[in-house]
Image 1 (cartoon, rainbow, N blue to C red):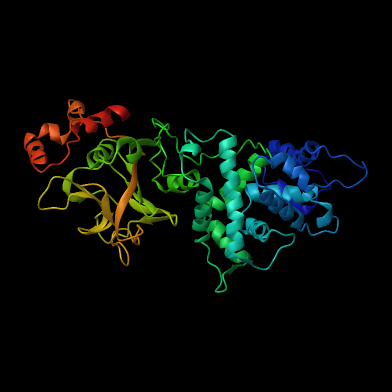
Image 2: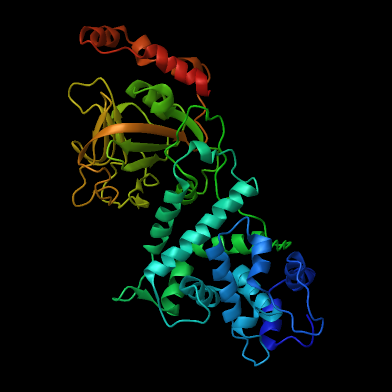
Length: 456
């Protein structure tokens, strides 16, 4: 830190470790050199938009770069020595921007977010929620590009996943839904400060973009893992129901202890429409994430905090939740009203046969029939267990596709039970097998066993 720095800059620099000062102080010169800028040696040096484009153009859109540039130019240093907006951003403005985005409080970040949402030089009094959503879309898109270009996809394959651009819009809308705007639908600085304090992704995504985009390598900062590792997944013939932004949203919803790699254990695209094969994926792989798409395009599902058991009683615990992906990205956690978290039953005459989460028999928050192909989400006005609304397009829906992802450590079978656990109920119980044949049901025992061999 130089003695000529303003008091504001000296206070900002104090947030960094002494060994990091040269890195922060050197960003300005590096950006200028990276653009090939030249000119009068005696002139006041400033950053131009094209200098940011040279450094960050492969990671962020032009609109996002303009937001950053105009934000830097709008920072008021409280003196008359700062360059005007038309001249560019000065060195001290850049340092304040870096300090507030990388080490700032919600109070300090709120004016930056307001200017970047407004997308013009100067700090407005309020911004409409729509402008905040537009800023978020640019920000999230840049973060996704960083994950792709820096090789941090953790085994996920965007080309075999859902529409990233739609996922960006849905994640931006979900984050904006946490705003508490005025009756006129606008946000002032205090509204944004409250939002940034509560929605941690805003600060996190800003930190990632600034640190990665401007190549600020701080000793005390490590790039966070926004995606869980993906392992043992056959991508070749798969069209996954998840997209990268949706995964960025869902992964942090899991309990902290669930850090195992995600593994695809059932997909109708790969294994066909079989309730028996789906049950195999659910029962033998520990905690799971179930995703469903109905024939009208709605995508939704549920998280099971433990391995499913085949029994005519409710199971699970309050860590389970339901969620929707399309047309809105939302998570619905346990209300405490009852303990009807999970239900899985098959081949019973007196109890419902199928898979359910939340609510009660015949009125589940999410239900798949044991015959496969049909289901319901009868949750009007809300599911008693999870507080979720109707998740499917229609109350009774037809399945388009289903996926099951194992997301935790699978249970360890007791000694001598491993081989037994791999046997289909159709192989174990001849009476059930005979009844199935008499009623004309297709036997899936061979496919059941094959699925286990594929993923174990």
